[in-house]
Image 1: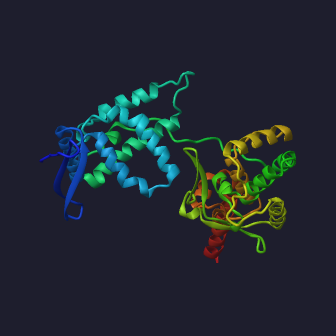
Image 2: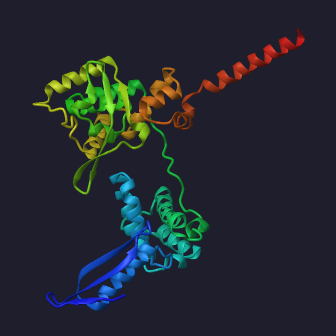
Image 3: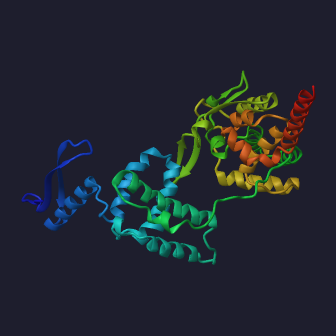
Amino acid sequence: MPAYKDPMKETWYTAFYYEDWKGVKKKKLKRGFPTKKAALAWEREFLVQKAADVSMEFEKFVELYISDKRDRLRENTWSTKENIIETKILPYFKNKRLEDIQPRDVIAWQNEMIQYRDPSGKAYSPAYLKTLHNQLSAIFNHAIRFYGLKSNPAAIAGNMGKDKHKEMLFWTKEEYLKFADAIMDKPQSYYAFEVLYWCGIREGELLALTAADFDLEKGLLSITKSYQRLKGRDVITDPKTPKSVRVIQMPRFLTEEIQDYFKSIYKLQPNDRIFPLTKSYLHHEMDRGSKSAGVKQIRIHDLRHSHVSLLIEMGFSALAIADRVGHESIDITYRYAHLFPTRQKEMANKLDMERGLENVTQKS
């Protein structure tokens, strides 16, 4: 593992051969080190990463994990994972060797996360604690699957927290219409909420919409992207899941409303966002309209639940609803089972009929 001094620049560099993941021999050259020791240390770390030795420090393995995973995830998804790794996981495990981390180390980390309180005395929610643990466990699982780690100490330690199960709230059609009347004083807000409620799309999908996404002759709305605000930048990503890419048939009245809205936008271009709003603005308008209309306060995402509940009430199947809102049909059945109150009764009645027919056949 040699290092060499550059007489012109008075710095050190290292040059060596290594095998890539295909087994091809390659040469590596790295310049600009202030000392020979720094050059050799960098060479050692590079070779350890290429060898993916589980004796490497946790922090170095996380660099591999990031390299392997980052380009496979949506930018906003990765931003969340990256924040958790940097602020909640690395400070506790970074200097430990990957293979030396034991379940007891994970339990000690869990206890610190559980005992944490912010300046106002608020603890992490059970759902967030579970998210933290799942991310740590995902790193170890990656090491097992691809780099030869023998076991997952986070899995052995067991999870902390619990899944997020917020109460599912929704407005009836009558409640929504009261709300819509209350926000008609701001047309942009009104049209945004009309699309959210009558099409059942997600907030990010709404904010990404451009004029080109609408076929107003046929009354069609294409959902192909989602909007996020990340680190001060407007970011357009793919929708949440492959199933989320869909075409929605709008009701005629909504198509006419969108036509009127487009006419009110000065020099609207096909790729202009038609709702150049922020999520905080929408939340503010949601609160304002709810209070003014005298209806219960719900989240913006609950408008999606409201759309689904309306379709269920109208008698549409879980499969048809799933296609419209970009879910799997089994998710609709599971999440909204309590809104299908007559289905179990219908099943029982039909089973009674089948049993009755069998008895008649046997007697004859």
